[in-house]
Length: 241
Image (cartoon, rainbow, N blue to C red; front, top):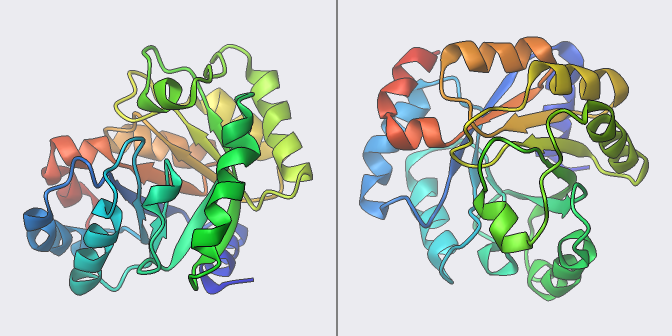
């Protein structure tokens, strides 16, 4: 297995909580990269996620190239489509949208991506992606045509995560969606963490230190912050090393 996968697993085994910064190439101006990463490098961030639901061709490649100039943190692709694959990154979350039933996002897009991935040296990490209802429609929901899992169907979410683990997923990612009105609840995080034996990633709607700590305390091994930094880079000041 690759080093990024091993490092995340080792941290999870030791109870060390990790932080990822999610950047959407569609929303991030390249000219902001230097100043933004001066703050990232002073923060507790452990790695960078790059991806979005709708991104222009070559935008991801250009952004990762620029990011690599300004940080030594690992860059992991979190792609919404095969056009977001670039060999400039270090790894790729090979996402399967196991909360939905659209075959394109369970296996279809994955097959289409192989010709691109074959030509790269990316570390691939299979990840079961579970979209949880957050109070409003998300871009993921619109693009994939799938319905998020209701927040009150906790056992169904837990069972879906466990099924993903049995299918061989290396990580489970609970996602409320970008700009979510409500983050994934502690009850869901706790229930999934108690059931699975693989690292748990949680993202979407986490906009305060209190919400971040609540996710960690409920069992998240990795918390992903995106919109909070887009709206207020001062959030980094609360996450300094």
